[in-house]
Image (tube, rainbow, N blue to C red; front, side, top):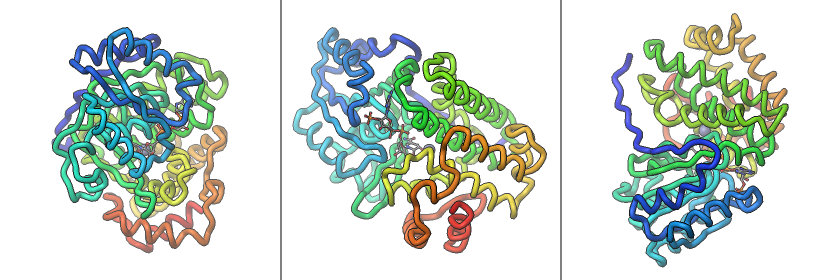
Amino acid sequence: MESFSFYNPTRVLFGKGQIGKIGKELKKADIKSCLMIAGGGSIRKNGVYDQVCESLKANKIEWIESWGVQPNPTVEKVREMIALAKESSVDAILAVGGGSVIDSGKATAAGIFLNDIWNAYVDKEKIIRALPIFTILTISGTGSEMNGNSVLTLSSEKKKWSISSKLLYPKVSIIDPSIQATLSFQQTVNGAIDAISHILEYIFMNETAVVTRNIDAGLIKTIVKMTDRLQQDANDYTARANLAWSATLALNGISGVGLQGGDWACHSIEHALSAIDPKIAHGEGLGVIFPAWIEYVSEREPNRFSWWVKEVSEEDSVARALRKCRETLKRWGSATNLRELGIRESQLPEIRDLLLTYGPIGEIVRFRAEDIEALLMLAY
Ligand code: NZQ
Ligand code: ZN
């Protein structure tokens, strides 16, 4: 097993009725005022916003609000939120939403101490401080509620890049799976595919982290089964809860212990797709890229995939395991090729060129221009 360092300081409050505890958690942390960050309004419809406001009032926490974070969030919007946070001298950030809202919250928390937040994403400035971050998660998938990552897009250059810092772990995250019943099935699936992909980025790295890979096999199988159940019944709480916690575990450090930090080629490639077209959901993009990546890389290194074929897919060849994977995506109504994502063949060179500006891509196979082209053609 590879040597590793494991760190996770986020406290999670999980289950029905936990959202009402947010005010008390802020008060315990000596927070007097916060900036509440939200997306396009789903939290108004499903009652989450009202629960949060009530709890803040009951605990005498003052707050201001910033709405309108879009899926695949932009640095331009974050700059606005940083200005607001500075102007009102808040003590903390409260992100209420999905990965996009939480990532924007993290960037705001760090950005008020920097010349410009984008500098941190391009390694020109180091994150030195951040306001304490609290989150209420409303869609499971990214794991952002329990990790130190944030992904933003600089729209003007179509660069969707990430940062990772121990200062960006939320202090407290509340996960009430029951509020995810208002997600469309497609959004539920996007989260499920994202969580599975986080595990897949790790598990092909080596064979010696036996315990981690067995946990990971259990997580993937649970996510698939729970998503199938939610396709039948969006209000199946057991399925929501197990899917939610699996997704958190898929990117909070546990799923990657001893797996050398993972490969992450598929994430880089997907980030270029959703940077070029922000209407592409991160999870759906991964559902197209990951099978193509396995197909491409397994031709060079078939043995690397044997464990996944047998223990995760319960099949006897990579080809059969991939067929099963694509059938699952189809059953869930998710895209299985770039055309279904709305990408045109004429855009492939643009995606390749953009990716070449993203820095080194992949560990197992380091993707050069010709590998990217071949992979995109396979995915097309
Ligand atoms: O904006 P609102 O109105 O809230 O609607 C959202 C949004 O349209 C909606 N939604 C969320 N909760 C809902 C709901 N609708 C009904 N009921 C609810 N309970 O869902 C839509 C998608 O939300 P978003 O936050 O964009 O989804 P997700 O959590 O998948 O986040 C995706 C972003 O996170 C990044 C992705 O690249 C993408 O930008 N990632 C972040 C990571 C991290 N921080 O560790 C890792 C990931 O690999 C990923 O890159
Ligand atoms: Zn992801």
